[in-house]
Length: 189
Image (cartoon, rainbow, N blue to C red; front, side, top):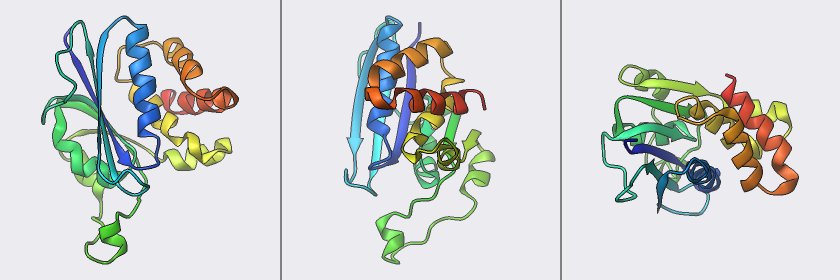
């Protein structure tokens, strides 16, 4: 199998690292060589966090180059805009339609761009979900990242059962059921 390149982008505190652990787990479970690399901006809440997950028969290096991502998972709209150029032609851009103002916007040094999703749709295959709203319906906003992952999973090579098994093995025991429900909300969207 050729190497598949997945990129996860978000803001500190959004669960990008848990998501990369689930992705790493499912690729290892399937018997692939996998390389993970995390690139942090400001790690505290509000800073940009980027994770690369590469898997295949043999993966040389962990970094995804510009124009090479098969799937870009963005937990926030502005992060999707910032990193969309990493997608390869025909790649899937999975976006949580949520706005989190970066510090430059909060302090008034910059303005938050308008119509991000609509503008991205002009150039990319965009799959958007308001995961925070869906997570509220489940009664736990902290599981929104698994809703986004569920939507992204439709663009990867693993079965629903494989995903659920690795979520069960990765998340804290008391949160297994809610995380599986969240994943299925996205997966079945």
